[in-house]
Image 1 (cartoon, rainbow, N blue to C red):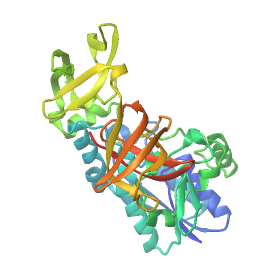
Image 2 (image 1 turned 120 degrees about the vertical axis):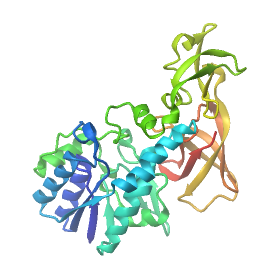
Image 3 (image 1 turned 90 degrees about the vertical axis):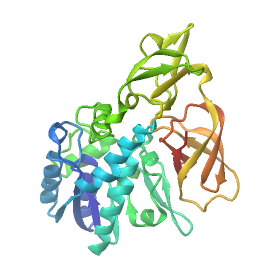
Image 4 (image 1 turned 90 degrees about the horizontal axis):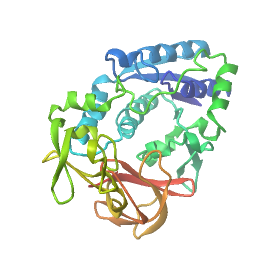
Length: 354
C-alpha cells in the first residue's frame, strides 16, 4: 500500500514510518508546521515546530522516504489557538488536542494523503482500529497507560475507515523506543510531546490572556449565595473542580472549597464545599457517533477528563446532543470532552455543556 505517515518528529510516528517501510509499504512522510514563536520552538516536549521538523526530516532521510512539510500556522492559529482562548473566555475548559486532530491533522493531512493517491494514512496515536461488521471500530490500546482514545473521540467514521494506528498493539512505550533503536533512529530517547504543545512557558493562562485580554484582571470569588469571599487574578486561571489559587478560602468552616462554576459574564468564580459539588446529570453538544446514532438510552462507561477513570452511566439521545446520567456524582467541566465506551470500544462522545 501507499501510506502517508503523519510525522511529528517524535519517537512514536517515526517508529510507525519505519515499521511500515520495513513491511514493504510505499511510505510518504508529512509534517505540519503549526507554530513558530520563541521558546516553544526549542523547549523539550514541543511538537510540530522548529527542532521537531528537522527531526522528522532526518528520520525520513534515514528511511529513504519522501517528506513534505506543510505550513499550517494560520489554520492552527484560527482553528485551535483562537478557539482555545475563546473557550476560556466563556468560562469553559477546552481540549485543544481534539480541535487540532479534527481541525488540522485529520483534515489537511488526510486530504493531502488522498491527493497523493495513498490508500491509508497512519499516525503514532496509541489506539486500536478494529475491523467490525461493515465498519471500522475505534478501541483503547493494549497499553492503557498510553491510551489516547479520549482525544480521538471526534474522529468521523469516514476518517476512521482511512486511518491506521500501528502502535495500538504495542505492549508499552519502552518497546516502541527499543524498536526505534533497532531501526537506528537518533530520536529513540527523545522526550514525549506535551498535551498543550503551543504553550511556551507551561502556563496556558498567559497564552489565553494574550489572545483574549478580557480574561485578565481581578474579579470576585463568591460562595453560592453570592457572598464575596476573596479576589482572583483572571478567570482563565481556573477550571471547574479546581482547589488551587483560592488563597485563604481554600478551606472554610473546616471544609475544603473547590470551583463549582465560572461566570464569565460577571467574571465571578463560584466556590463551594467539595462534598456537595458533584452532579449526576449533564448534557453534551456536538456529538460524534462511531455507532448508529442512538434512538433510546444506552448503558455504558463515560470518561469526563483525559486522565480520569471511566464511570458507569446511562446516555440518552437529545435532538441536539445527548444527556448523561451518572451512577455517582462527579465534577464535569464545561468545554471538556465526555467519551462513551463499551468495553474498550469508543461509541462516540461530545463536549460538556454548563
